[in-house]
Length: 223
Length: 65
Image (tube, rainbow over all chains, first blue to last red; front, side):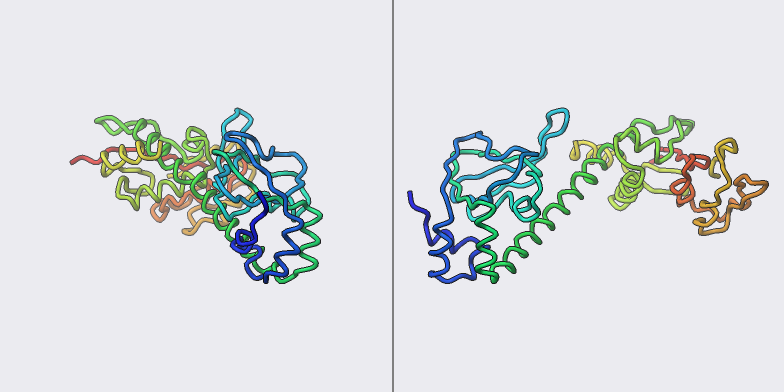
């Protein structure tokens, strides 16, 4: 199947270009079909191509040392992936796998550089794409470092509450951080967030659980 | 009040600098709490201490209905 000019026009990268310019770029675009669950890119390998999803969906993710996957983004038709290593020359920062049958349009790294030189007006749109990517990743960092920790911190409070005499173990934020597997600063923010939710009240050296049900709900929702 | 381990304190004075209420001072090269009424348990002193000499443990209690 031939690379579709209308599809190229719909990609944000190239939306500022006219038909003649798109025709010249089209010659540098190749098609690649990928089967479900097939790996498109491997994290750490050298990057050779910039990809646009023409149809289907691609999952971009990182894999931890324990083999756990962390999804960074879901790439849908019209969107690109592997932009970063194409522009900064480094290795693939993440892996990519097809979530179903996928049709990709690819541009080789050297060809992308030539396109930028010949059509510098696409630079602004590329910046917009990358800026949106950064905004998305910042939000993801916030989710990963914050939202789930609140649940773990809630659990720690629940499990260490003092008995009838009020005498339970006294915990520093550092100790809570070690239990929750996070940084001390994040525990501090989590405690403030729990207070804003009305589940606890911070009264100098005391954490008062004011709404046990709310605390339990936060534990369950964040797990 | 914050708990001080004098064996860990190296007298750097970082905690004194961050205390909003001037509750801390270095006395004989060791951190000392000189005022506890104003301390609002912000835990900044604990946060800046590199040796863990000062800590601010929380008591967790359940509010009675």
